[in-house]
Length: 160
Image (cartoon, rainbow, N blue to C red; front, top):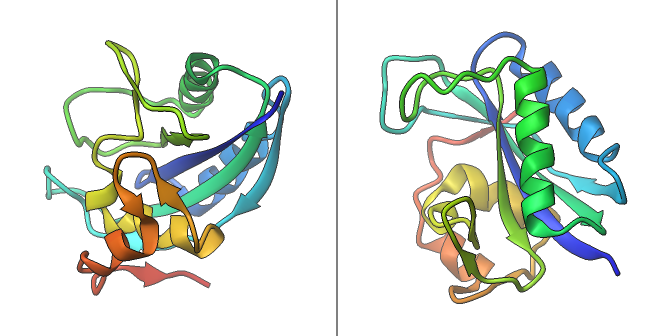
C-alpha cells in the first residue's frame, strides 16, 4: 500500500538549484517510491545562524511503499551523497531534506516527528507545499492555506 508524503528540500552551498533538482530525481529512485510533484524553487533568507548565503528551497510530493522511518533513512542517505555535514544547528549546508508529512501519520520518537514540528512556522516550507497541494490539511494543525496566511512570506522569491 502506498502513502503520499511530502519532502522539504533546501540548500545554500554550491549550485543549490542543481543539487535540489538531482535530489528530487533521487527521491524517485528510493525503493517502492515515485516522485509525483515538485514545487518551484524559492530563495529564502537563512534562519537562526544568519552569517551565511540565502537558501534555495522546494517541496516534493512522493508516493511511497516505504515506512516513515525508511523514508527518513533514504533522505539521510541522499543528504550524505551530497556531502551534508551537521557541524552546528542551522549551519550552511549542501542539502537538507525533511520528511514534512507522511499521509495522516502523527508520530513523535527520538528520530522522527510528524508532521514536521516547525513546518507551519516556515514560509519557505508552506509556500512551496501549498503550490503543489493547495487544499492540504495538516494533521493536528488544520488547513494549510490558513496556516500560510499567518506567515510573512515577503522575503521569499520564486525563482525562474
